[in-house]
Length: 95
Image (cartoon, rainbow, N blue to C red; front, side, top):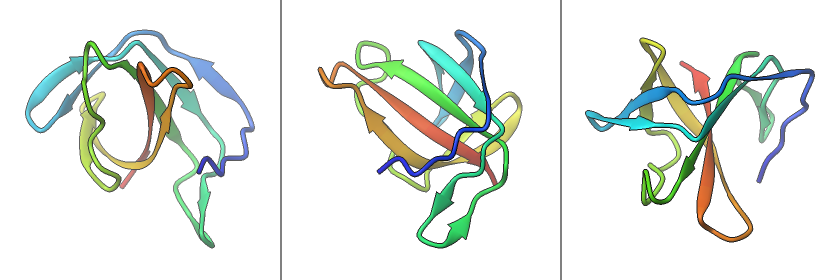
């Protein structure tokens, strides 16, 4: 389901985000200045990808959920699962 044209990415490392009022630590986070195209619509040009191990966050929040990250609110636009299903990545975009 990943429909992303990657112009450039910057690995940011472990960061904190808030989901449903609970603080979680990411395994890794990535900033991408690419455009995320979804069924003819286009998301803002800046998005983040937040990776979590299931030991830290058991289940991902649903698509369209709101996440606080770096003191701003973002929307979950895509969820990607690791092949072993032990981790997942949330693609989030600014509202």
